[in-house]
Length: 266
Image 1 (cartoon, helix red, strand yellow):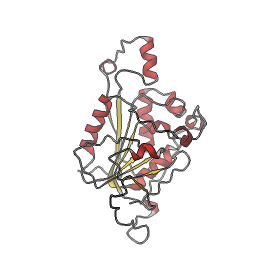
Image 2 (cartoon, rainbow, N blue to C red):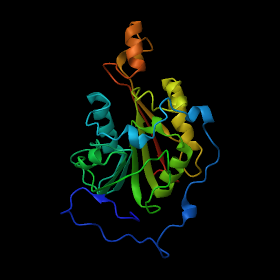
Image 3 (cartoon, one colour):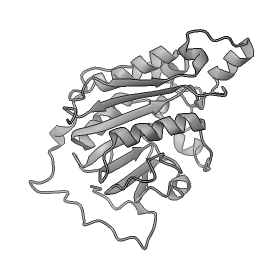
Image 4 (tube, rainbow, N blue to C red):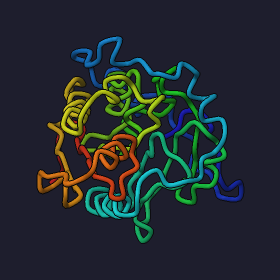
């Protein structure tokens, strides 16, 4: 549970009982996943735009960053892998969480960089604003979430090893983390290792983010590719290839990596 009062989206909605931030019931800080190794070199963490992320996201962007096919696939995946009545953390969220509309959860906590976007998200019970490239520590109780979700945002993390260690810490044993992405990005804010990579290398990169933290299961990869990509032949013009590079293709490829803290529940 939250160890500091978050901003509530609906003031009339009753708050949950105060969190237990001390005493024997709180998991020890040692429950955080140990970082085995660093995945990125300094140049791989660099961004073209040196401005702070809080400044870049100062204005709300109430748009969909991927197409409807991607979002439908993501919602179906959440329907399959996130259990009803779960405690869910939507990390690096925005004005929509893509959770199945018919599913009820104990609580959904959102995190992001723009309070106006988060305030418009109807699925969030609470939210908080912080810049994970400035401070990776999450002001959340250890072992308090059944699921952590990160949608089309992992490409912006400059200290992914520390962030994934925090994800491990806040997950309950057996809790799931689902990281999804496509080929779209704010190019100037994506890290060098992502900008310069291929679809394959980006999957491998996120795989290494999980593997570098002790206690995550081997990540499972889910892919849903447009027919031309899935068949191994692009059949596209150089212009279409360039559009795909900058995330402007008509059909967005879907990638998700799924890993659990300690074990996958039966």
